[in-house]
Length: 123
Image (cartoon, rainbow, N blue to C red; front, side):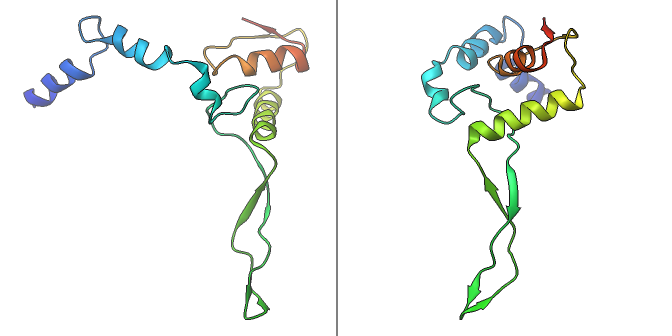
């Protein structure tokens, strides 16, 4: 409807008149101190980490063991983020001397890890 279109143009339009510059500043001009309070300390990545998961220990009901009720995630957030990076780079089959294009994977953690551990060039 016209009202939905008008609402979009006023609040969500990404053109200069629609406020994209204001939206960019609101999203990207936030101090890293804020992100350090809830992201991993080394890479500041905010996408899904890959934890090492094991079956939850059986619960006891009146002293009787019950079947496991799911998974328990082991390790720290930092370890899980490094596992994610290694998994992504292994699946991409990154080799020394190859080039990799980073188009915005957080604060550069993937690029730095790829260059250091896998010996590739990052653009």
